[in-house]
Length: 447
Image (cartoon, rainbow, N blue to C red):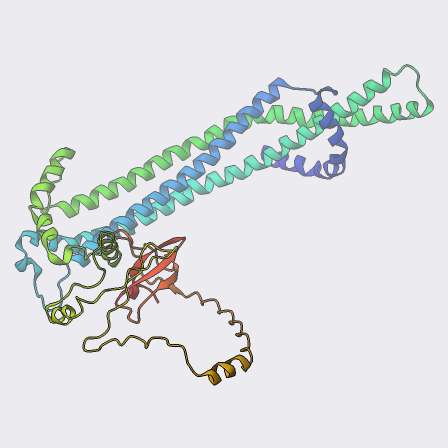
């Protein structure tokens, strides 16, 4: 009933507040500057401080309850996914009837993954009603309580506005009363200010006394309202933990020893059970990373800096044909300003001889020279047409790719990659640019 009365009081003051708000601005400015007096009520200020703490605690309680339910849902979802992934990893391949007989060391795990996934599905179904109970028995009442707090906060705001009106008329009335020589207009204004001050005093005293009377009672009732929520929430959490413990123990019966063990003991048991399987996996050829194309290019560039030629190694079939050109002088390597190395031009095919151009000889025919002098000058060459700018080609990543060697380009699904260089086959390494970084990547990862 007290909350309804506060709401009615706030609504009744709304119309008068809407008209008086522009007139309060000058008084607020002069009060902050220290030119006007401001009234204060220490008792009410203490009640307001406690009320603000209650508002913050209610908001935090609502957020923490929501975070708790979200964490339980995430825990169950992650555990269920963990079980399903293990169940998939130990599923037989095509043509395999029983993995347990083929891998006797993992027979227990292979047999336990399906019931583990089933137990977690049952656990999630059992916990769902408990989470709904938290929503209806804890979150719902807290939201209702928060709505009551908002109504009371509006009433406190109205009280602050009435205090501003009281101080505004009080300062104006005091200033006009202290004026020694009053004109006829001053007398009229004095009469009007006395009436306005009386109205403002009555309105402020009414709402201020109401809040000072009801706020302590509200704080006491609020504690009685919140106390059962804590006990309810505690028992609901306890039920959830019991469900977890019951399902995990029922799964472990006859399968695992669930006696308490130290973390170091668990780690040592894990190291003993996995044997040397990891080292054997690392020795497999398919587990070794093939050297990236960019790494090969860098290695060849390093060799070229000391005079080693770039290209494929000379095979036995081409060694004899290459030997016939060994005696020919090769043109010196050309270096440009833009790059430090330019690949040498390929040698001519074997069996062909390069004939030098005929030497230049001046013509002894005078008529020919006379005709050459009469020949008109050739027309100026046409200006070359501007070359069209190359069209930038982009591709879209179909899968995630993480760089596994220097020079590789990492990207995520959906990234648009600018093509720098590519081949005709998608089963090859292409060169691209993403976010200013250039590198190579597999062509079959994009479209």
